[in-house]
Image (tube, rainbow, N blue to C red):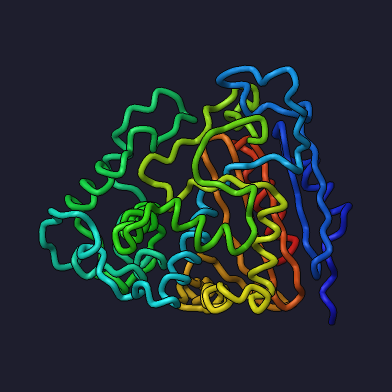
Length: 352
């Protein structure tokens, strides 16, 4: 039976159900794109307003052209970068993390056994976040927990941590682990992480409207707090760029997913694009949860599909694609609480 394609009406229903100033649903079906936008706030340029008003001549930016913070969806970009460097033999999946980080890293059996593969697959034994992040003063519920988490502090937290389990034996989602790929890949190649991403992933895929760094301007969606009324400062990932720094337009995110749907069309990255879709481990009581290097994979009657969600203190994102039907979905909103369940679950349901 042929899988039904999500309709514009279904996309519109999701957009209208999310209480956020700006909401975007973007669909690619066999390369044909449909974008539906909406929201409770006035459409236009608001990205730079938090710091300074935009010049009078600055044109309004349509919601479909805004760059949104995608939070943990960044991890899929980092996984693709790692796979690319590994397939180019610049480094190896089995390279030990402790050997790639600046000394001193005190010896510890479990810590010394962590590899780059363990970090990318959330099997390092590291916690979701180190205690140093939880102990940061935040002041407000939506404040950025990484505001003071510089790379030296993150590396210091790693040097003090004791993995909960032997690396490779247990899956446990870890922002900490993926974030450590940033300094590890940078040290292994002698190139800053953001430059590596631009050279090996963003550039080859043609993602000109995707970035991991500032400055922020009228093209950037402005995040909002749980009330939807108060603006959040732009997300500053500190030393955690590899786990949550990406900002991208809906169009670039569809281009990214379309590359995953058609790896052979992107010769420099073809092997890596295929590899990040390979099932690597299963977990759950009935082994119902499948993981690749960077993506979650679930089953449906029309074939397996891949997905990842993300959030910053003021924004939400959900990306999904199903190779068997050539379908890719992007869902974005610039208010995190409480629309996550509506935005992410509704988008998931379109494929599941």
